[in-house]
Length: 509
Image (tube, rainbow, N blue to C red; front, side, top):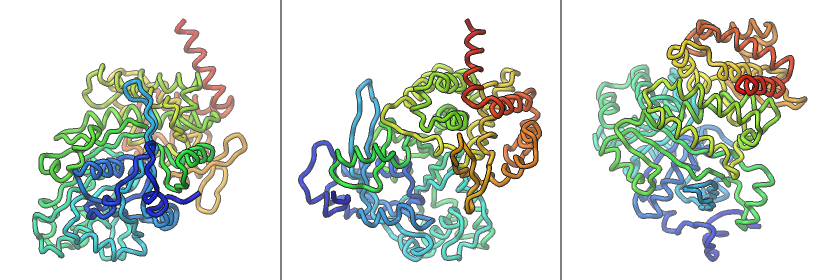
């Protein structure tokens, strides 16, 4: 079976069940510079740009910057930067099954080996937009030297790109870029802009450039919302390959629901003209409501549930929603605690409608969203997604949120490393090893090695560096988390959760 490429696919006869790109789309100018190659970018922004190109609206392709070598780097090269997005879901009570070969990516460049080529893109007159998704820890200030080849951090790389552009066009105010970070942090555009300005001062860049940086460029706050799991499991991948009739090492599955909310004015709308191609792209002066609903309900539920579900022996979100106990927890934590705890003024009916929609998305029979992938940077996600909700919930109701306490206890247990393989800390589930991909993994390994569960709970909750607050000061939360953690260890995760919900049901009845 042939590998997806221009020669193997685009010269063959068309298939009605596969939306193929016209060859003319592969010669469009490079208007976008994208930092990151992940499936979320391919499944939402890149797909939406591809859709607009097909409608003759945006007419621009994407140059992708990859910070690390290996991985999918060779796959892009071998497949002429084409990839298949298999969209599966339910819309308006109808099943959606679409297969789209996306051609929006023109090339993928290695930051380590091809930095000079990236700087050439930076000074192109065609370039208009920068997109990024460098995970939730990517938008951080690092005392970076932008003259390094390349700079270390994402903001350092972006500042180097902007400085090269400023110099190439002699500070022309019309040559600024619209920058749209999609990292899931509040006010991601505002924070990135602040970091760029501070980094410019740290690098001793002149005042004229800093003025151009502030006035000619726009960093937009944005929010992406689409469930795009990683590579399909072998059985699903094989079935899709047989159906498609070709091999695709970049094959990606996504749900049909899509939202890319971008904060911007009419000038931003004009540059991001691809918004006209799909109602899932929303550009408004304020997107706070979109962000809060998605961050607190969808992502917050994921984060509070992933430890419990994974340690219970369940591998995917769909499996959890088919499990009576785990689905009861997920529904309870979302509807009973996360919605009342949203630290933003949202109409309760709007929030509940969004919440039930999220639960339906979790039940999507086509999506295999793996819990282990959701645990990546678990600590940072817990802080950003759930700590503000926890604090607001207590302030509103003066009650300790019991479901959040259980979810937090499972997070602590998941972070219990038993050994280290090369540079990665690992835990164990039913005798099998799993990787802990978290910047705080070493910190937790040290605590678990020398503290009791109760001592560990108190120490972690008091760590204001992790949470921005002393969570042990939330009345009753530390004792509740410690009690649940002890139960999870002594009785088992699933057994504890089953007993808890049986008790709740008995009390309710």
